[in-house]
Length: 318
Image (cartoon, rainbow, N blue to C red):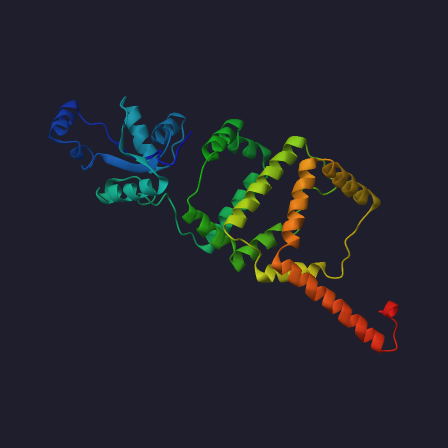
């Protein structure tokens, strides 16, 4: 399984005569890739370094890099592949790739974009719209989807993402980005008109006991984490939740009453549950804040009764 420090930086070089290779090797390794024989600089992990040559052998020749590799293979030779920096993170690998590319004459490189940029291009709005329409058109084809996402590729993606842990800095950046108003509006617009996962399904969805246990454990850990960091809903969220619930009585059915009754009876049969409950009640009732609240509440009740008795209304009419 790929780890965080599994990235590397590599180069593709044209094959050179043995006598020149030996001469360069004796002088020093750096001279072997600072000359004009380097035609590609890249970074990646796993078998990324071999992927370009494999593409050409499959007949995929679309870029200048692939054309150079095809010419080398046509002469019965093989491109020289060499890992320059290893044991890096993705960010470190891109930085090293950029530094290495700057030390080489860019006119001799076949990279589509400058090294370290990962082929990122700032397209115009018109170009983006064309790419979007073409992608949607292709994605409607079942054969295309099956070709892009095979069982092997899905398994490889799953293995790559499984166990990946993001840094706290990246988590904070992601949270900040997702909380932006324009992002929320885009997500809302994208979800409108999309049918929900349980559309057309009748009654309560029944999950397996394993699924329920997993959900329960996950939510327990999540609330422990939130409690530890002092997390709470924002004031505007609380106000919105309160506004939505006002005037809407809680719907109790005979079935829900019976379920709660059965649950409480089952819990009450457990001696440890009764003991813990009594302890909590004693702790709450003996606290100063609780006594003060009870005192103020009783005083208010007696004050209202005295007011009613002074007037013409009876206490039962209030």
